[in-house]
Amino acid sequence: MRSWIMASMSVLCLASSAAAQKPVDVGSAVNPGTITHVRLQSGSVRLTGWAHDSVHVSGLLAPGETWVMRVDGDTIRLRAEGIPRGLAAPSELDIFVPMASALVVRAAAASLVISDFSADVDVATAAGNLLVEKARASVRAETMQGTLTVLGPALRVDASTASGTMLISVPYDTINDIAYARRIDDAALNAKPFGVVTLRSVSGRITFDANAVDSAFIHNVRGDVRVDASPATSGRITVSSHVGRVVLGVSDAMRARYDVRTMRGAVRGDVPVSASDAGSIRVRAVRGDVVVERVQRREGARR
Amino acid sequence: MIGYLARVTENPSIDPEAESASGRGWLENPKYMLVLAVVALAVGIWLSRNTTRAAAERAELPPPADCRRFPGACTEGLNTTPPPLLLTLHSQVASAELVWRDVLERNRLTGVFPDKGVTAMRESLAATQSAILDAYALLAESRAAGSESATVATVATPVADAQPADSGEALALDVLREAYEQKLALLTRAIRLFEGAV
Image (cartoon, rainbow over all chains, first blue to last red; front, top):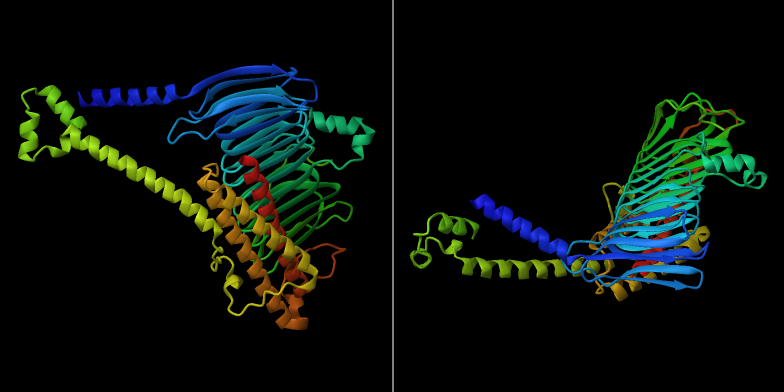
């Protein structure tokens, strides 16, 4: 009997909570090349690029929020206005925007999944998780506290967290990689740096994985850093950390000039003999250790 | 209350008045439970608001140094006069700190700033400041070591065309520059992010 009453009360609580969310289902046509600007408060939001010249938003809005959508010159602004009330259920939104349009997202405490964009993506949330996948142009992603993940062949990545963990995996020269194929075919693109990566954190763990990269700058203050990446022939990977541990994954196929130093820590493992005609890996640690680990890498890991 | 409801439902002979009067079942009295629930809710809301305010206030305080991870940050009498090469960077960091405090002050009561983000920012500021102080301590050590300071760095570069090892002072200056740059980058990002979130 008691359990029956408790179950009934739980169902009532959940029902009242769900009922408090407001459904939203709106859309609008946009001109090709229109910049999409999204501003959110909290909740879980999925932003997906699609091949249509239109924007569509569906899902549930938190109580206290209203949805605003307006075209402002060459920008369409999507905004959840108002502050969600107390313990109300958060917003859950599915947003589709043109994949070839630049995307700018600013959020206070929303967790975001962003996928399938061929134009630049600039996304920032103060306290939420971020996942950016299948982005083929430049990605700028920031979160203070949440976990940040970027997966896919983004041309450039500028990512940062304060205390959140960061995982950046950019398979730049995998087979069928559109960005890589375009770079190889296009003489103009071929001359530009490919895979420029800047990663910063204060206390979050950074993991960076790339087959080949022209330029990578990775800096941490207190968190650990793991790098499983090879520099392109004229490329350069720079890693610095104050008190965190730096782990370098080194495979037999990798060729690089190594410059590994720590002021108050130790270097563990064997730093490979450098190749003078290869790109460089430079590590600077202050109080942390640097560990060199042998890893297996896929075929064709180097360009 | 649930226990009370269950007992009354299962045994209608229970007299609520008698239960209350006897003092045995006051905790199961719906009136008391309702009052208790309201009081608990009020206290919860009050604590939550205070936590938000406290987080904002803490974020304004000078961050404490992390002496365990950054031992140099707690060196007594540490000379923190910026080297001439880093004067501009030092000023930029100081300006960004003022802007950050202003952003926090203007928006602290709007309820937009998530506590977790403010707390992460505060801890990160403490860490970057500790790194700067630690770098100053390393710089002082390397200067004191003088010509022997080249031995400060552990060098592991089995490379034919390796550059000569940097002097300890040059390395310490490099560390100090990076520590300043990291703090400046953090403040710049936070200002952009928190202004954009409002």
